[in-house]
Length: 334
Image 1 (spheres, rainbow, N blue to C red):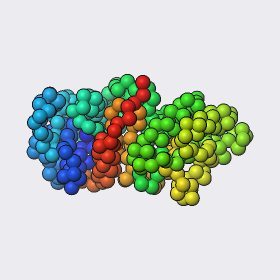
Image 2 (image 1 turned 180 degrees about the vertical axis):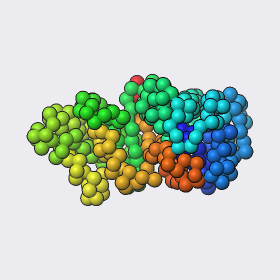
Image 3 (image 1 turned 60 degrees about the horizontal axis):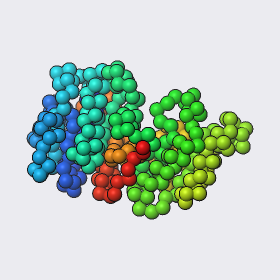
Image 4 (image 1 turned 60 degrees about the vertical axis):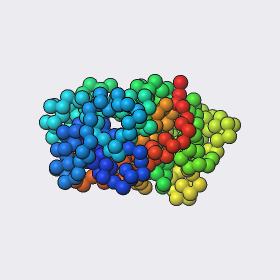
């Protein structure tokens, strides 16, 4: 359900009423049932009538079929969460969001669900709650014991994978190295083979302006770190070009011959992704032993509980999770 004060609860309700549900076995919404009722009344939406506790749902007899949509009421400090104000950063919401994530990971790891799809959380609310992770990706990696993982955002228009994620720009260069870049290239190649069903064409961006201009800008990251990773990937049969200057890598002519980009830092990849497919992109965490997808946008506090939230990104996230769940799962890192 994501952060209770954001658009996540409304998006879950809109998903539950969408025609897509008829194409799936079932959907479980992990969150707060009474808060979802409050949001449904605020937004004029119908709420699913099948509600069970987390304990009941997680221990249910596997031979008994689930209904199309189930609200799984999680023990998140109900009274505290019920008092939240929509659109306001709140430690209680951070604690609740973390609770839902933990339970979803548990459900996926025990194969109670085939995949988990996450609504947006707020990083400041997590921090106020004392959660020592900057976002979903890091939580998932820690709780699944995954070392080699990366964030990919994909859409029909453009797909990007990130070598570094939630770090300050001043720290990016220090976190880039050839083994990490090669890991991201491999994970992206494997994922795109599953998503696109063909050998993908990858493109790696440089870190510096003009891809370093042969050492003129930066400290030789392109020559010392990025190019060797690309060469190693090519020796493994991966189709990858680069490093290309970031300011021209996303031009239409380049996008036509690129299935996925390997980007060195967060905004290098997310600016073009959100410019081209803001409401249609899907966030995928690669390398995990479970399937996890997510919306590609934030909590949108300015429209929380107003009935204005667009569910397209969540719907696409569910579609991709379903596609991946119906194919052989690549196991995650060590």
